[in-house]
Image (tube, rainbow, N blue to C red):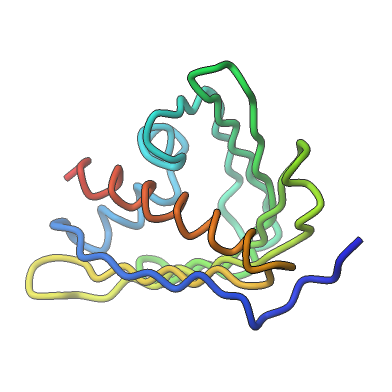
Length: 147
């Protein structure tokens, strides 16, 4: 198994036309997460989230071809409505070999909107980092369209 390195990082920002509280809820309430926390074109049939430090989450995504991908992890830090830090792993091949990575989300006021910064680190290869950057970019587009 390859050990992840912090030199390969996804770092994205997006301004969402909603309050920090609304965006934080979209990021932490399973029923809201089902609408955006997978790349465009994918369904999100299952989101489970025990949003507390040490609590676990599980996100099941399904491609149009019926392939299932499950992301899971644990919350490390929760500061409503400012910051979330959680681990991220994949259950199924071919992504399970990535190992555990870490996602940090910060929310800041931005003239009546919210500046979202996503920092996802610990990818074992540049290819894996690029794939997650594409996925998160698509997810953030879906989140932005919710408001």
